[in-house]
Length: 267
Image 1: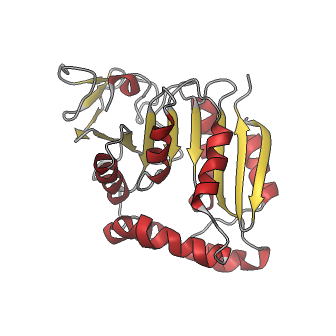
Image 2: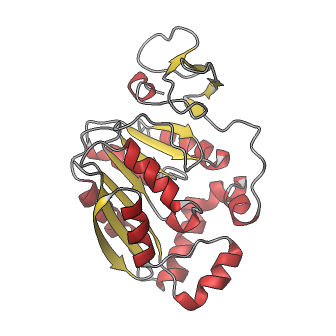
């Protein structure tokens, strides 16, 4: 965990206090030891560079979320699960490199740290580190197995990414601290999308972008997918949620069944 990233974080309990290492840290990175909230005194562990705001007290998730947080799912996600979903949902007409190029072009030139929200195994966070953006890349996910796999993959690729375990909608970032937020393929997994987007809008710097993507499923499949744990939303519902959160300049790229959209915090 880089000190420059720790400096833009805030406590998830009192939602205001700044965080400091409990003990003095030599250099610009902290690998172990708790951080303490200067406001309420809450302590959060750091292990192998991972700052954990969730801890072990969280109840085991059920249904779809529980399966998504299974260790086997995390280990097989990049090699088997995601390619299989792409093949089934897009009938083979999907290209990951093209998808990434769209995200990269919509991010532009960020003027602050880039958050990969719901980063999973860190696939896109790792690609962003090759762009030499000159800003920190931060990956955030609630799944412990996913974050652990992301850490392992980042080390193997020798990429410099800061990972945080936290649970949306509450984001552990200070107001106007982020240069961009990227949320790939997961808005259909979030129950409180509007609340999450409000937090995104709060944490973004003025005119900084939010880029989201996910699957927009046909209306007649909504009941079936909802029973499985998906939160199916139409394009109009997404646009209304974005605007209700205070983000502006909604624009989208549609490659059915996937929708990629961009909005930004007002200047």
